[in-house]
Length: 73
Image (cartoon, rainbow, N blue to C red; front, top):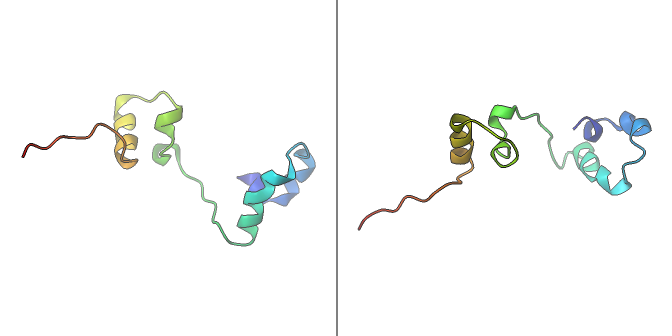
């Protein structure tokens, strides 16, 4: 995120191909807004990290992922 917000990082990131600066260009032109998301609210965490059951259930619920409940007719 720092690279996307600050072009000054380029001296240390020359190995990054130009196409990866797409997000930075979009942020500079105000087409997208970059915001920090705390890990407890990062919805992708349940797919990439080993979480205990409480945070796992919370993030799955927020992501609308999980077993579907069947309703009886």
